[in-house]
Length: 412
Image 1: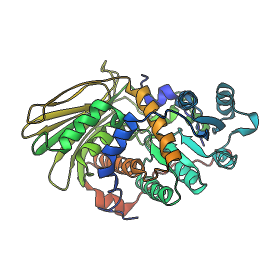
Image 2 (image 1 turned 90 degrees about the vertical axis):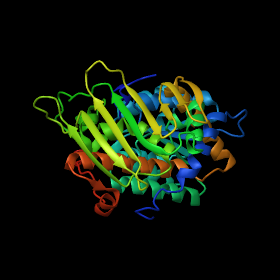
Image 3 (image 1 turned 60 degrees about the horizontal axis):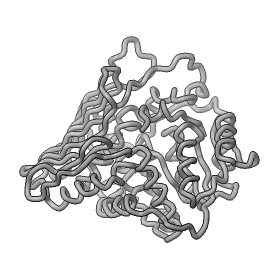
Image 4 (image 1 turned 90 degrees about the horizontal axis):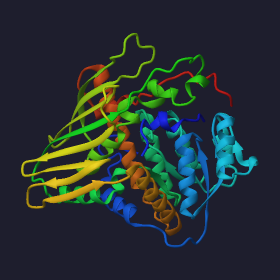
């Protein structure tokens, strides 16, 4: 259960396999997002014993936010690297007996008396650790992306359904759908504010990634964000970073695409690792709607950015991680407003919603289904660009291909 480093990871601070899979979140997501933005528990009937799976920078930061919320006790921590587990334990006041390391450390955490876990580690392992926690009877607060390949995405969606059956919460920590301005924009678009929706552009620009030096073993690769440049660990730029923009598009449109064409580019000279700095992908939905997604990880002086612009035949809308969101023109014009401090405020809202869902028994878990579809969409774009031809989602699901990597050098 490898660790991670937040600055490297984020690159900024601030059943049915075809049409039926994941379909239930589309109607539920806007309402869930509205609740997420509005609810702040006023009192706590009890404190939830929470464990951290992953003890890197973002995990420690989130642990502090869980503590500030007041409804949680950080009961245990687990990371592949013992020094990270120990430092997180010291920071968050965790008993030394409940600090676990090694690849199976997360399983010992699940057996330590935790009621819920936050899965905040290398994306490769999200689809292993989240479902395992549900199987063990724990609620799950999950970082994005929940998976980097088709089997992982389907496993998370199945785990979300199992969580509902077992009366457990599986909440994925997307921030854009918690923002009040974004919520109002999406509400109006889905009510017809743009007229007929014609096409969508989305952007996912991250700060530059780099090929790490001194990587000799798989353990080296899992240290301090060095995993980013390996597709079988990160899912690549289109999955690890720009999943936020993909999530926003699917939230707004209310369906997932059925096919994609695209290109990707490796621009650095003499590449050692396999990540691609540039993706340009055009998706098509079943109703003919077209969507172009552009993402990059380049040192070209652009700031990181995540947003979409939706174009109808009567008006235009923007939904973003920062900057101004709005509906421009048409019968439901909305001047909107600035999306403020979403990196921290979105997490704070989601932590509050996670608590409320648990104590009030809200276990419909729409974000697990949504996040699975987001991951499938990212994989569809990645594969279309890599194969340099049109790829359908049906084809991708039929292949059910797992990204492979040799993990035999890891300690148990």
